[in-house]
Every structure is written in structure tokens, then in C-alpha cells.
Length: 138
Image (tube, rainbow, N blue to C red):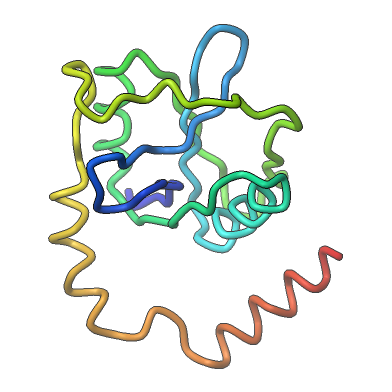
């Protein structure tokens, strides 16, 4: 199943995936809807968080990554309850790009997304539709 996750510093040595802290555990949110992931990313930006990139990935890859990094994961269903970022963010990330227990799934994502990147990501009508949705949130 294809899901959408938030990635920071895409295609750099300092790439990281967005997670939320629940108690003493980290959890990665996997969005079924790209619109929901985009909306969540905009809410993060409104909290002065770094601007993430929305990446489409295979849910099994994220689950494997979570198991290797000892993270939890949650699927945010399309048309479900709106996911809202926590009001308090961790001031510094604890993700280390060279940590041995973390799996780098970016190369696979790049290969899959390379074919998609040749086409425009959104049509003008799709951008207008998304813009209207965002304006409705205000």
C-alpha cells in the first residue's frame, strides 16, 4: 500500500523522517491521503517547524524502518479525523543520519519517484482545488 510521509532535508546527508513523540516513544505517521499529509505539513510550518517534503512510499518500507529504529507507526486514514501536530515540538531532533540501526529507504524512493517527477506533480485545476481547501481551513 502506498502512503505519504513527511521527510526533512530530502536527498541530503541529513535526511530525516517526521515523527511525533508519544510518551517516551516516537511514532511515524503514514497518511493514506497526500492532501492530508500536505495539510499536516502546512500546520507544522505554521508552528515555525522546518518545511517537510511529502514523499510517497510503500507502507511496508516504513514499517520495516520503524521496527529497525524501535519506532511506532500509525496510518492516518483518508477522510478520517484530521491529524493535528502536537503544540510542543522537540527543539532538537535526535535523528542521526549515520546511526547503524536506521534503514535508509531514500534510494528506493528516488527510483520510484524519478518516473513520477517527469510529469507535473499537480495540474493547475488540482492546485486551485487544494488552495480552496486550505483557504477553507482559515
